[in-house]
Image (cartoon, rainbow, N blue to C red; front, side):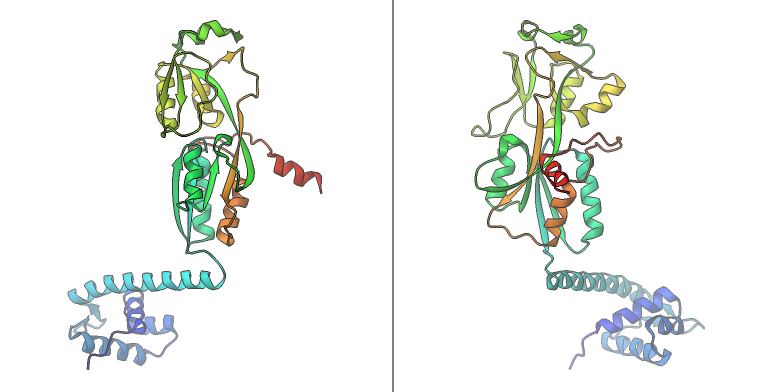
Length: 319
């Protein structure tokens, strides 16, 4: 009857290959050398293949042994991953986390979050999606996302919500745009013939457009396209301050001041949302806590000043 290969044999194989000899592998595995030699001999007998070339003073892997070593590493990596996952389950850690972020959430901050999450929870699978307003909420409500981060337009009753940092929206144009030549507060008549680039929901039944001042609008469904159109001088519009900051410093965009808008009129508080029937484990709780601590920035950019959310102000006042 065929005697299956054991994990111990595969670990011994990898140890001998990595350490360079049977004796060194035995020391690493805290076994006697004869046990490692016997394990390798049994492996060869079970497979019916010569794994080691013993014609030299130091045994070397045969061609078949090299192929077996690659497979052994993959098997052991999967087994170690399985152990991490099951260990996490025993400790109450979720096997996976599914996130959906509003497009206004800073990409740099998202990358920072994912990098830190990978270190804190290496055994947890992560799925990240980006949508606009009501589409974020829809994914949370139907269970496609276990946790969402959404702008105010996407908030609906019945969801648990935690307010995060603020995203400040600022009106900008290309330096070549006619509005860029106007100083101070710009009267509404100057926007009559100016095309406004508006970030609009993909679905017809989504949240209505906000912050629309010009009668003429071009609507786009992703922030990157809007950003590039504004830089190209095709119109004017609001951008998150963290996204526009590099262009403002480089002079590829300039800020304007519509008279119809107040200074902080378009400051938006993002919120972490989830369904009320959700019970979060350590991984989700870690993400929610981390979201309130990370500064907003874009990749390669310096962290921007982070507005304090009402939740954090309330906590500080109780100390």
